[in-house]
Length: 288
Picture 1 (cartoon, helix red, strand yellow):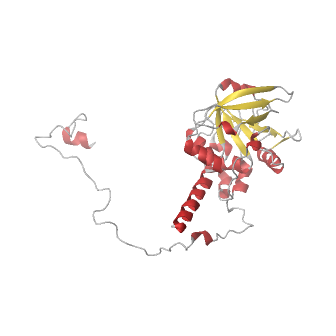
Picture 2: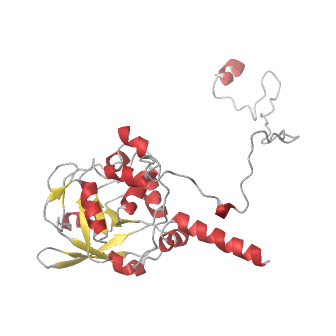
């Protein structure tokens, strides 16, 4: 609008073409005030020293707030013979994984909000939402309940997904809930980029089929084994599928972990790694 008002056309390059004989200077701005900011500490409360001794008071009976506990570091044995919790069919957005609405009041309580995990995803094997087979009992139940049944038996599990898994709004809970309920890997045809990174931060394994048609090989009663020792940048990860009839297939999976993100995984989560680095730095400073 300003270009047309000044020059009468939209193709003028004001950096090179004078207007009525006047060369306009490009606009300039200051990133920071020349004299600095006004010092104003009214209402500021300095953190306690040392900060490690500060206790955060949250009622143990609260259904809306819950202190987070660190996720455990990976153990190779935990990635063996894992049941398929659900094979999602078609679109599976973050709203399918962690719906909003009335659930938002539980955003500060990981265990409670995990009761909405994947309740919107469509089960490939029966075409229904929130109805999956419990491989222990053979009965069908809600997705979070089956996940909790596995967790109660110290069983880890995997999710199988379709294209662009995790598209939509960036919901941290959509990555935290599977990890909290003992999920270990999400294996799909392709990921939405932000959700893939969120999963990595929580210590999950976001993996994609090297051959997308391998999605069709996954059966309802399959057990999946992963060799996490093979997690190296740029390297495929083999997955062993054990079918109910005893037959075994090996497929190849792709990942996008770099060295730093592998550090997140080995620590159990990105937050675990950052915490350990802070402690190490504090210990070194204390020695100095």
